[in-house]
Length: 155
Image 1 (cartoon, rainbow, N blue to C red):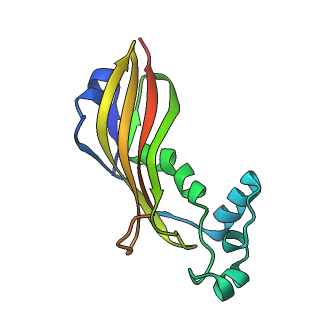
Image 2 (image 1 turned 90 degrees about the horizontal axis):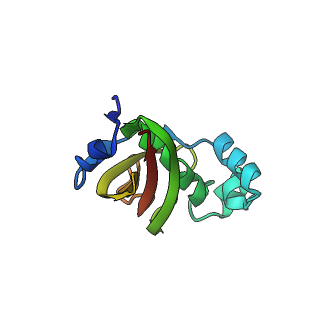
């Protein structure tokens, strides 16, 4: 599946109100969880101690950090839409983010995104997206929310 290519503010505006697509599936591994723990200094045992998590956690094993799953959003979004002709992209805002379901180790997740709105801020596109991180074979999503990116297109 190739991403939708958008090269301009007008190109982005043409998709307002539409589901932009769904990313490929990404497996959350224990190694990735451990690397995230090291990067964020969050070594809570429900993430980093598989034996204890299997014995004591209500999830039956280790789970990914909620913020790890959120940090995957730009990577998964780029599988859905490729924004070209940019000077830069800036993460701007997260609204109404709700972690609904724990993501257990070795689960596969994918992003579903819809473009809610685009505002033209003196040539900078302020794009608001409804996002859902789905877990393969699990009815309840890992999270839902609204995120905003600022796209600074080339002149």
